Image (tube, rainbow, N blue to C red; front, side, top):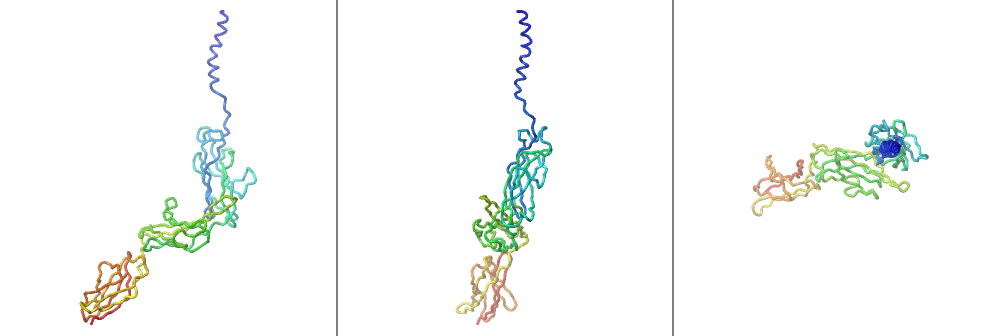
Length: 347
């Protein structure tokens, strides 16, 4: 019995140690430090440029943080481009420094061979590699190669009575037009867009648009570009032209109004002497009213302190036996424009 107690004691001492070792679980293999695939990869075609955007991963393919002490070291993003890839590997067109979890991007200026001709599919591949040049699989995105829509030409903007009129030279049929107002694309207001299917403007005119929300006397920037939708291999892609912009200065004003026409003056002496005036309004929606002027012996008098809204006026402050000359001025926010004058003599 005494010997049995001595033989059991070492086992009792070692048992907790054996149990403690078993609680650690299986040993994990060392990380390969391969950055996981990028996500959110997108391609935007504008003119002869394709802008790629993505988000870098935060972990390796085996779940190890890329920002910790066991990270993959300095990483790079590799970008490949081809009309079609024939193998799983490719030759990168660029290498970019990459940070875990940060947004990534590449501004790819297309060579003439890809920026001209008929529309066709263009494929990009992006992946991250560690300091040893190893990485996970590629992430792909497609866009369109070929000639982009032509840039808007003859773009101009000017104040008019109803707002700001933006105009340009007519261009390609069947291409959508987009017009926006704002100092930059991130904070712009879409003013007009043509129908994607027909290329026809949704409102106003095909070679311009009226910004009724534009304010005369404020600096405003307008941007216009063309957009084409192409179908390639059952997929739809957008191709935009480079944008054209024009700025309306804060000093810009409405043009002077058109003058009234066909002014007539009739002396009426049936009772109290008066001169009846009548005129034709100009074809100008910006006219806010009319002023009536009279001249006698070289002295000019404004007969209407507040502009008239109508197209007739009776001057009852005349005297028999006198001769008068009259003219009418149309008025807007910038100034006035006078008609030709007429003379009348009272008996």
